[in-house]
Length: 212
Ligand SMILES: Nc1nc2c(ncn2[C@@H]2O[C@H](COP(=O)(O)OP(=O)(O)OP(=O)(O)O)[C@@H](O)[C@H]2O)c(=O)[nH]1
Ligand SMILES: [Zn+2]
Image (cartoon, rainbow, N blue to C red; front, side):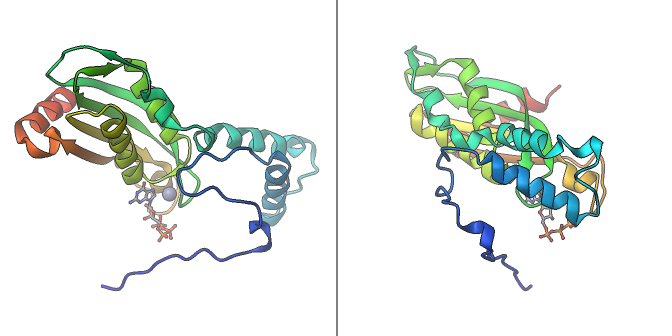
């Protein structure tokens, strides 16, 4: 089977400095965003100067700043404060709802993240796990990378004995366009440490997540 790769084609709008992958960008260029949205409207045959569209470039610029706010957030900051607590068994926070944006079509994908970890003498505030999900989701993403990133962050910064991350999501690029399969759900998992090595631990997590 042949494999196609997509290489970035440079264009004149590409001269702005880019952060390395996964590093926080410092600013959002609202003026550039407004201009780009106006160009899109013209390109699809709309009149950006008609009354209903006058404020649209500004609104969309603010929307992109919001849905890509994770590019300016380092999720590791949420895992710096921990509490000393002996707890040898699994901690699971499930049904963490998120919205992200598929990097292929810039369309939303919506779903739930489930995060379990085996503490190593330190526990983290439960809300911080949801904050990590938010920071990682609010970027152009693919679901697989999002799942991996969350698992690696928790494994590394909590020095956990194991981490399991399961994400289930519906991708609007598969529902409202293209292949148009509403109802299709994508489930990804990333397992580390005890969740990778011990099938019973992984099975326990899956039963707690999906055994509804
Ligand atoms: N693996 C993975 N694929 C994704 C994700 N989000 C979107 N996609 C897929 O990205 C692929 C992009 O495929 P391309 O062939 O380059 O683009 P396309 O012609 O618009 O593809 P269609 O969606 O099939 O119309 C599609 O198959 C999408 O379903 C994701 O999070 N993970
Ligand atoms: Zn897509």
